[in-house]
Length: 628
Picture 1 (tube, rainbow, N blue to C red):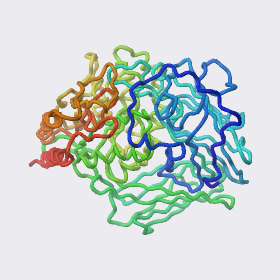
Picture 2 (cartoon, helix red, strand yellow; picture 1 turned 90 degrees about the horizontal axis):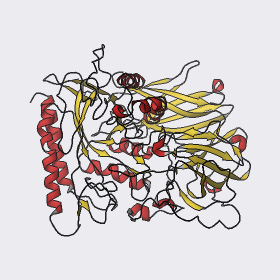
Picture 3 (cartoon, rainbow, N blue to C red; picture 1 turned 180 degrees about the horizontal axis):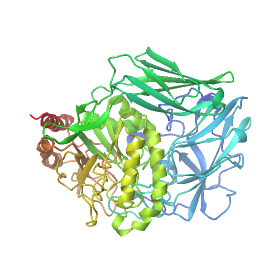
Picture 4 (cartoon, rainbow, N blue to C red; picture 1 turned 45 degrees about the vertical axis):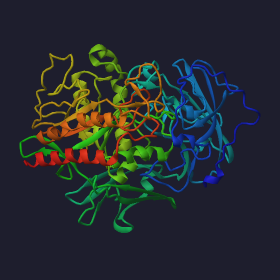
C-alpha cells in the first residue's frame, strides 16, 4: 500500500468546541526553531524503525481528534477537539496543553484508508504510548491485552478488523504517571526540583505497514570480531515452518557474504572478509544488512545494518580495571542528556531536532552520552550509530523514592520493572552505539540488595555484549556507596554482578577508589551554569540564578566555572578514573546548568575550547592506562 492512499479523514460534521482549557501545565511559552516549523503535514515523517526497513508503509502522524473523560466513564459520544500526534496531551505542540490526572482517560480517533490484499497483513505500530493503551479498529478492540508501559514500542495486527476504504481507529489511554508502577523517569504530577511535567497519551510516531502473511517481526545481531562473523537470529510470524530466510551483508555497496537459514536452525552465521570494518567513535563503520523471508510465493524484503565492536574491561599497567572498545582502553567522556524539550516535552519536535542534540556532543569533543532515565525514538540511536557517539543507557525508573524509605513499593514494582527492562534491551540490542546499561539511578524505585544483584546478573547473561553499570550514584552493595545500608555484607560470590562502580557528587567530580574489579566512573557532577533569561521556563523552583543574555560577563564566568569543574578530570583520568558524566548537555525547564539552552538557541561555549579541554582528558586517560 502506497503512502498516498493514507489520508486524515476526520469524522463528518463539525467538531465540538474545544473543552475549556484547565489544569494548564505551563504558562510561559518557549519554543524551538524546529517546533515553530511543525505542521500536521510535516510532523515526524521519517521511517521510524531504521534497522528493519520496509518499502510498504504509511505515516499516521498528524491531526487526530481527542477527548479527555473520567476514567470510569463510557466511550465518548463527542470529542473535545483536535490534537497533533505524536505529541503528548500536556505539551504545547499537541495544541491541547492540559494536565492529565490518574482519574482521567484519553480517547483518540482518526480514520485511515486501507486496500486489503489477500495473503497480506496490516500492522499498526505505536512507537510510544504512555501508559496503558487499548486499540480499536472499526469498533472492535484489536489488542488482545492492553499494552502497558510508556517506554517501548508495540505493534497490533489489525488484519481481521480492517475493510477496503476508510477505517476508524480509536485509542483509549490511561496514564497514572508517578502514582503507579511504570517506568516514568522524571515525569511527575507535582513539579519539584529536578522533576518535570508528565507527557501522557500518544507521544511517539504512529504508523502502518503491509506485510506478507509470513514476515520478519524482528531479529537479533551477535558479532564476533575475533572469528570475523555476524550471527543473525530472525524472529518470524506466520507460517514459520514453510519460510525460507536469506541473509546478506554488504559494505559501501559491495556484497560481502550471504547465507540461508538451515532447516531446524535458529540463526544464520555469515563470515565477513578481513580486515573487519570495526565500529568505534573514530570509525563508526556500519555494514548493510538485507533479510528476505519467502513463504507461499510471497517475499518480505527488509533492510537494516549492524556494527562490529567488542565491549570489555581489562587491567591497565597499574592493575586498575578500565573499559575497552575493540580491545583498546576507552574513557567515557559524557554528559547527562535528559532529552526534554520546551515544546514537545519527552517528544522531540522533529527528527532534525533530535539529531542536533547528538551532533552537539560530537562537535564538542564528547565521545559518549548518558541518556538519562529516558528511552529516545529509534532515530536517536541510529544517528549515534552513524556518527560514532557511545550511549550509556539508563533504564527509566519509577518515582524518586529511595529504597530505604519505601522498600515495599520497590518490591511491588520489581516484576513490571524486569519485564520493561527486557523490552528495552530487546529494543536497543542491535545498536552498536549502546555500550552500557544503567539499571538503577540513585536508588529510585530500586529493590533490595539481593534483587538488585539478580537484575545485574540476569542483564549480564542476557546481553554479554555490553557493560553493566552498578547502581548509579548510591545503593551499591558491592564496594560503592550504599546509603543507609551499613549492615549489608559482600556476597559470597567474589565476582561482582556488574562492571562499573559509579559515584555522584555535585558540583565537583568524585570517585570511588580505582580498583581491579570494576571500572570507576564519576557518573554525575557539575550542575553549575548560566540560566539565560528568555531561554528557560521561568517557574518557581528553578535551580540557578537567571542571567541576561546581553551584557555582563556570563560567557567568561561560565567558561571559568566549567573549566574549574572539568580540568581536575585530567589528573583523575590519568590516575584511574574510567569515565565522567557532566550535568548536563542541555538546560531543562528551570535547570540552567547545561552547555546549551533549553530551546537549543544558544550554545554557551566555543566548540574549539570544549574540544581542546576534552582532548586533554582523553589523552591523560590513555597515557595513564599505558603506564606513561
